[in-house]
View 1 (cartoon, rainbow, N blue to C red):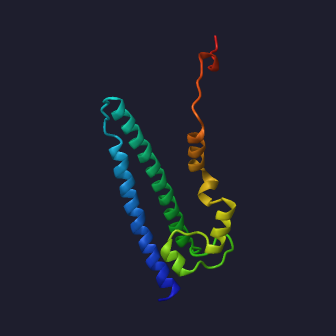
View 2 (view 1 turned 90 degrees about the vertical axis):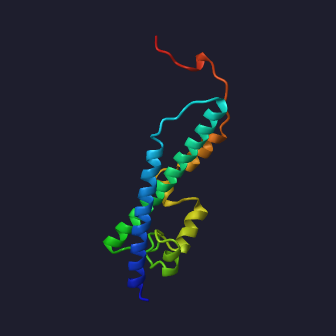
View 3 (view 1 turned 135 degrees about the horizontal axis):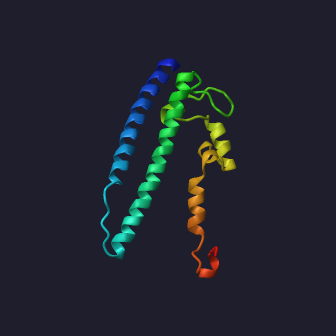
Amino acid sequence: MSRKEALQKLYDRLLVERNDLRRKLAAEAGLNDLPSSRGDFADVANADVENELSQQLKAMGSRELAQIEKALHSMREGNYGNCEGCNKAIPITRLKAVPDAATCIECQTKQEELGYTAEQAEADWESAFRNESSMSDREFSMNDIEIDR
């Protein structure tokens, strides 16, 4: 199979994945519109945990959708399959494994060793969440709040 044929199959695959992900995200958005009934403290805590997990899954789905859209745009522009780091052709085997890959394995490895990814350049929400969750809650008083009089 030629590289062109393989890229066409990947394009078709990305379209299917994009459409499936769009449907899934739309369905999940509809579920959150349902009214929530408040029960005892355990029910409220459980609902809050489920809501947080749902929000994190939506964020992951949105990032995945953005990566797929970027790959489809690259295909239409004619530069899909070229590494954004070194501009060499990304092997078809890598693209089959990760169709929305924007870098070759070597450049991806370098980025990961540096602790940098393209998604983190936009917004590093995972790091922000880890940082926030590692901070301990502290007691505060009314003196901590500034009130203009």
